Length: 286
Image 1: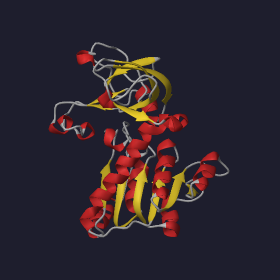
Image 2: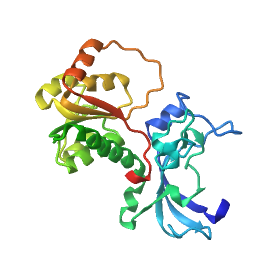
Image 3: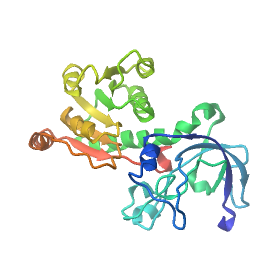
Image 4: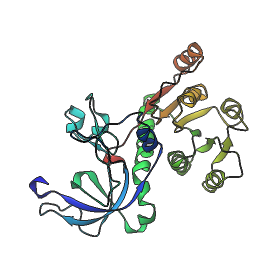
């Protein structure tokens, strides 16, 4: 790598999630120029093997995770906020136009590597998905500063995959009462894990989101992580006044549903609700 800034990393673990499934189904994503295939794997954990002569940030033996987004040409890219790029073309390792980490080794620059303490090695592969959650929660609070006084008490997390469970954990650590929604009826591991972190598990096979919101909501913050556009719209309907919805689902299909659009719009305006999305985070959130 140019300027002696290369870092050779041996891959120890790579997470596989819904994004990889959707890429495999050709719903979105693209191979790098000159290739007819894309190496997937964007949730990475590895060990530094060798560094270039100009590298001081990491050393051989360090555990690292890697960021996913890479800079383009917009102003946001130039100041390190490449997850907020305004370029039409964006670059993500293992997702779009750049190969991922599902290899024995990879080479990158230290700017895109985050050191993981040895004591966290067993969960280091969760660093990248956790960064998305931290970004979402941090930005939710930043957006709600507009209200001068916003102290959320009740939160809903839609989906109990890795993102959903980690979001429930992060919100519980911030003191919120959390309802975690998933399809799987109990008994199941997802319910056991949610209860271990002090969250309430709600199976949508037994209780609708709207009925659960009557009992446990309305919710000051909703973190949507199901991959379902239908659930994303239902999440809009169970927000409390002054509430905020964090969207993480990437839906590359063509599904059409019927929604109460006028009612949703009315309540968003009159009840001062907000909604935004979070994608692969920059290193500030790792």
